[in-house]
Length: 350
Image (cartoon, rainbow, N blue to C red; front, side, top):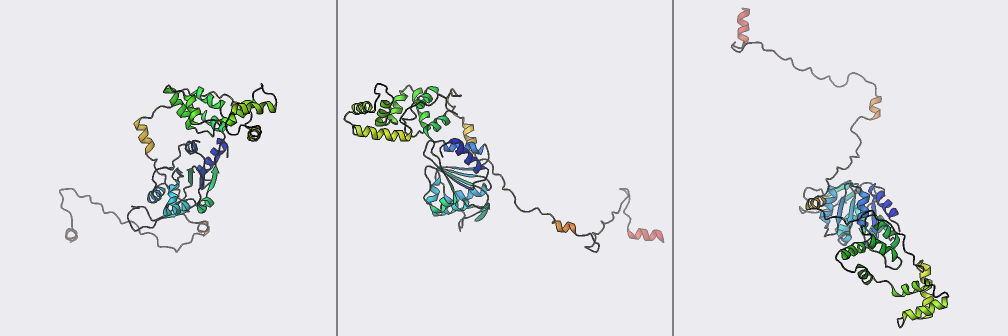
């Protein structure tokens, strides 16, 4: 998978419940975390980000978040634990209702039952696929490997320094696989007054041999292949691979990869002009507070008579009718009058 649009479509389908278990594998620096947050669109979810995630905590939090998507970002180390691997396998089951069990004689679970059903879907974001067969057979695995051009276009949606972005666009075909963080670090170096271009080239060096082949191919001063081969040997000097045969071998490889002719990427005007600000403490606290859990949808049938009950004719002789309410005795005596008893009534009649 090489485009962010296709990647985002899978994440959206996961959030909508079409994929009960999604494993996303891709090299660091591709903004995988931001893409899954974008797919959630503010929807409540259970999110684990790295850290030391223990099986009891995972079990308890999944109980409190039943029915919500569960995302594990760089937290796949839970698979290294036997109980944790069993819980992930259970949550990644393909059925609509997944049964999670944590048998214990201690009080680590608190008021959480030792067994419960949930409809939560599971997404694990990692740098590589899992080697466990039982987990891999349950998950839909996405290998996200965008090209440098695709990463450069994705950065343009949120980046703010036009000069740095344009520099990357001119060197896309010569740079190693891009890391989005390189753009951010280059901006910090630039604002600190450092030579950010030199730092980039020293930190992420271009392949000198490939660059010489590309420069020679685009130099009109050497029109024939033999001229280019001689020029290649001159520029390589005493370095390893400075031969005519090496030139043609390197040239053939670059041509097969589509990197023989270096063409800068089209300029993309950025919509932002300044980096994002530092969030205040109140906002940080709100980000750290998990959203309230939504009650899981009750899938039990309604407690109402079936159609057959309504088709029966109405007959008498069923249960006895309810007894009438007792009659209320009214007392119209005045406060200073003595209440009349049975003896007063008898004397009056006599």
